[in-house]
Image 1: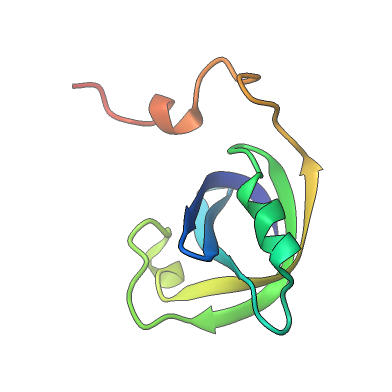
Image 2 (image 1 turned 90 degrees about the vertical axis):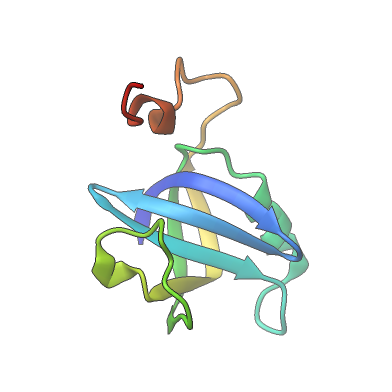
Length: 107
């Protein structure tokens, strides 16, 4: 898939990314194992939000719903990364504001 890295976070030895394409968001996970080297996981960890990425991976059913995935039909799947390419990276402080901040309702 190709999309924008909405969020990137490291949890333990895994990296979770929420990839946004149009109005849909799907969770992508990179975890070091026999098929995925540690270097790939470290590379994923350094991807900045709003970078455009191409991901090759395997779709897997999850045991629990992923609340941040949209629409609801994508809440029970995640993509396990096999390969990832940054098509257009974002440098730190390059964006005038974060898209997530702009999409929050005013209080």
